[in-house]
Image (cartoon, rainbow, N blue to C red; front, top):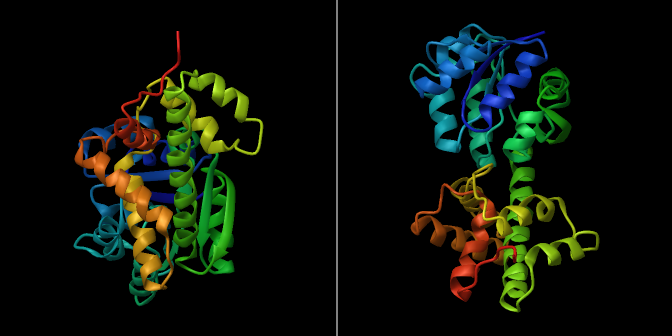
Amino acid sequence: MATIGFIGLGIMGRPMLNNLLKAGHKVVAYGRTAARLEACVADGAERGLSNSDAAARAEVVVTMLPDGPEVEEVVLGASGVLEGAKAGTLIIDMSSINPLVSQKIARACAAKGVDFIDAPVSGGEPKAIDGTLAIMVGASAELFAKAEPILRAMGSSVTLTGPVGAGNTTKLANQIMVAVNIAAMGEALTLASACGLDPEVVFNAVKGGLAGSTVLNAKAPMLFNRNFKPGFKIKLHQKDLRNALQTAESRSVSLPLTAMVQQEMSALMADGKGELDHAAIAQFVEAASKVEVKKLG
């Protein structure tokens, strides 16, 4: 069992930390929100005093943060992870960030003898809670072998996708597919509702066919039940698509559907809906069509 520093105690981070505790690992937790840190200590984690303190007391450090600037600050900044980490420490960044940022941080860590890999996740809060996340890893084969037993405590699917940065590139591909699926679902069920059909009946009719998907099964009921409690927030998915578009631009790749859905999310954020679950992407076309997708009766 490893001693693990865990930084980033939000919707995803806390249940991931709890699964490490359940697996028997010793965890030193740190986050800037006092209430979240207190909750993790109550769950059984040790209290870290800073990013560098959590790293100094651990052999492996896991970070789960909103975006690249936060990861850079936590790892490379003042009192950061790299300041406290010993040579040979393994940093596993499970945030979803621009792969170019992952590679930049990895180079800075390597200069101090610290290992860095990217291992973003998919599955949202429900799968973070039950430990069945899909984890996409960018690492050498040697570091993947070192990290895999730890990652298996948090995910049911752990895949080495290539060198550092490949994990986040794979996650961007995942996020494109999820976002476009949700947007298409929203259009389809808005049309069905406008034609007087019950969207729940339409969902049950199509879910066993080619249109069926994990995205449809998870998000359609949230839409027609009008439940937008966030498992994954629109503002975070919009960030992921922004990173995808930036990465695509650097490679001269055209992503027209991604750009369209990213703009829909931006409009929803401007309308104050960035904190809603990304199932609410459908609200963009609902508003444009003046139709609300909800169960009949």
